Length: 261
View 1 (tube, rainbow, N blue to C red):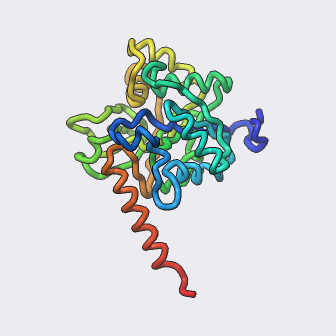
View 2 (view 1 turned 90 degrees about the vertical axis):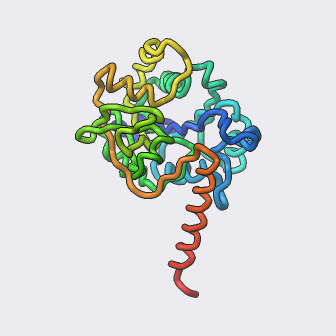
């Protein structure tokens, strides 16, 4: 098979999906005007960092967007971004991220999909992560190094690099490991999403619930890959401050390491 971009051959993951998030009520009133991935950090927006990481992969890139579709359309036009915008409406009504992924995968005849969050900055080499994919679902795992910090995220429990449990924002986390937003989902995993939606009996869910359902209910082998480098996830307003501190620190380091004229 060869995709429309003419560069991706059979046996490789050819489609990247950028998940842009929900309505970001934690960022009100700012997020009533601009979605989190379009917030500036330095001279570009958060999602531009993601696009820069995706560019060397030569994949077809799909953005799952909700109520902010017009804002992302404007961003794509201004930046001449080579992306496909996929409006999904209200993710609560349509079943959340898993349901949105299923609709997109079905429209593409269920290829393997590379997933990345659009509201994070990370220095992970996407290609090195993809090189670890062997046809089984693969999650990027990051060690935040603190039981208090990991409470903000989902918590992963591993055994021999396999996911055995995933809990969203637990009071008593079992590890300092979290799923950090990179994943590869093979076709057969995407086709199971309707079973998951039927199992939970309601439409709204967190993505971590789907991960946990795969391993605990269905017994699916979900592989993981530890990633290193900088990882900054935009959730609460204080995380935006951390992004700017990272950017300013990096700018100073780059300046100090530059060759004198």
